[in-house]
Length: 262
Ligand code: NAP
Image (tube, rainbow, N blue to C red; front, top):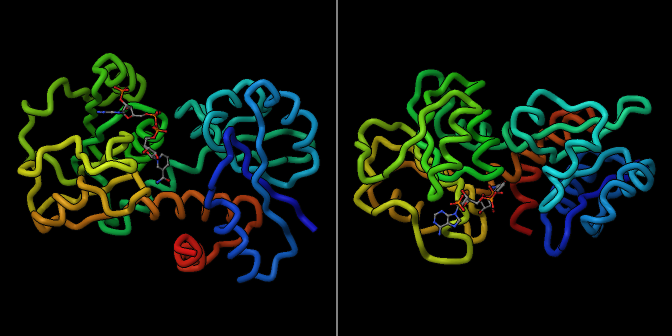
């Protein structure tokens, strides 16, 4: 039987086991998926010891950046984003990649399949923003980035050779096709980074926050008749990419999409 896990601290309530177990049942794969608490001080010894017992491991807060020096072979995505959310083996080599970028792409493309040349505004400059900016760049979108702490937006913009935006009030909303909330604003609160009158029907709105799924950001966009993409699409999308990597098979998105709501 193959063993998989998600590691984090505190590991708390994570959707990873239920998403992957739904895939095991669907494809009759003999495997287990557990949630494992790993304290930051124990990360290096866990990766170099316990990880031998697993075929693959998903990684959540706060270990995504700390894993970089512990992984022997990094994917170009993990290197560019500066974070690892998936561990796997190639023979005896510990490999790390980042599937958040492909998860974000799957989410946006559920509303807008072709991103080449589309103008995208990303709000936020944390780990999630880095993943989506990398994904947008590979898809050929033209991205601008705003962050509450401007220096972080400038740094991220320089890393990915995109445009930083210093002030939201200086922007013409008509200049954007897609607007993405990659801040934690809206997480268990009814707030949005954008004023409600920013939205028009021609925008596509994507909020990475998935607790709750219906956020003020998306509610304001929906009120203006803009199509909306909820945060579960990214969470499920990145797990589907992990599944493909670990098992070598594509899982129907609906299998994990339904499991998300269990
Ligand atoms: P992070 O690295 O801690 O970054 C947090 C970001 O939110 C920073 O840009 C921060 O700006 C901004 N922010 C926080 N409070 C703010 C406020 N009051 N006003 C304006 N901006 C504020 O977090 P992360 O890992 O990037 O995650 C960001 C969000 O994405 C979280 O809600 C997370 O749950 C979600 N997420 C979803 C998925 C998914 O699969 N759907 C995956 C990853 C993350 P400063 O730099 O100014 O502090």
